[in-house]
Structure formats: C-alpha cells, structure tokens
Length: 258
Image (cartoon, rainbow, N blue to C red; front, side, top):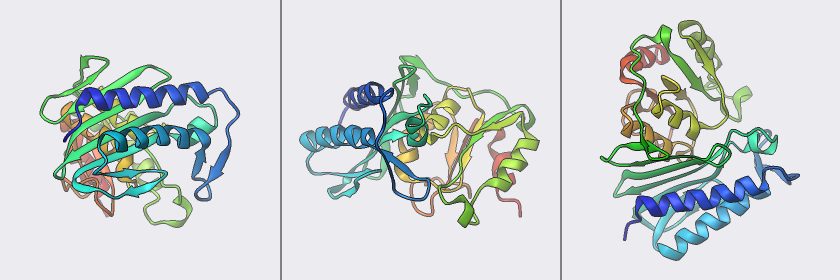
C-alpha cells in the first residue's frame, strides 16, 4: 500500500507543530560530530513521524536522520528529516523545516517540506506539479548566471575534506548576484522551486536532506541532478545541483571546471 500526498502533508504539519511548540524553550543539545548538533526536539519529531509511518506502513523501509535505517521493503522507501536546520533551531534562528519524501520502486513520488515558523507547506507529487500553500510553483525564468541569486551549504567536516565547497562559494559569488547560506538544504531546494533562488548546489549531503525538496524542485521545473550531471542525486557519493533550466549548463560547467 502506498501513502497519499495528503497523508504525507499531515505528517509534516503535525511534526512541524512539535518544532514550533519547542522553539522558544531551552534546548538539550547533543553532538553527533564536532559541529553536528541534535536536540531533544529532533528526537520528539522523529519519534512521532516514525511511529505514525510504522503504524500505517509496517513493512516500509525508512531512512531517517537520527535513527538511521529502519529495514523494510525496498519497494517502499521513506526519507525523513525531523528537523532540517537543527543548528539554526538550536540557536533560535527561525530557518528550519520538516522534510518527508517517499519513493515507490526506486522513484521519488511524494514530497512534503513544511516550515512551521512561516506556515509554508511545499508539496509535490510525481507528474502532478508542486505547490506552496495550494499555489502552483514555477522556477525563475532567469537565463543568465550574472542575474541569478544562488544558495549553497557546507559539510559538517569542512575543515577535513577536499569537498569543502569554499572554492565554489567564492567562484559563484563573483559570477552571480550573490550566494546565500541558509542552513537548510530542503528549504534551499524549495526556494529554487518557488523562484526565490535561481540555483542551489551542495557537494556532500544525505538522502533525507534532499529527497523531498529535490522532487518539489523538479516538479516546479528545475533541473535537478548530482554535480556530475547524473540523474541520481540520492546515492553515494552524494551531491546535488538544482536550478532553473536557463543556468543549469553554466553552473554544471563551473562546478566541474578544473
């Protein structure tokens, strides 16, 4: 049995209510890495989401940020991020979201990204378009990189990896209107879908970061691939580029320029 888009939307809204309720409290912050944070609200949101999914779809496979892999049928795969933007959340910066993607037989089919602080619900169903609070989304029509506003992010081990992304940040900062760093890959992708940014790229992510947002961007007309131009942006070694079609080739060229 497959879930409906309305079911996934409701999951995201309920988890978002948990995030909103805990936002102004003093957080219990733990560390998964040197700068990779987790809060008690991450766990509360994830506990709710996994509990609901396992109750309705006990045989489904789930990738979730805090719990890792919950084994199930590979025919049905969920990608769950209970808080995308935990560092922002822990510092009381209101830029974070709940991200839920669902894939059937290897193809992403449903995506919901919910920003509870702005009450913005981004949704997509494969082949049926993307929406924001019921309004159809379309990417920007800009065709020149110099007139584009871009967004990116950096890995948690940026001091210890050749994929630190800093050279690309400087390069695109000079080639575009500017480059932002919001701290939530799922929202970055949705903002491309909404035409707020022309392009997004990141060199090292996890599938739960980008599954839902990637589908939403695709359904809004963005070109979404990994940074070598391959259609699969969920498999390791993971990377992503999502942008309005008019600047995709130029961005891809610059990302692969030696």
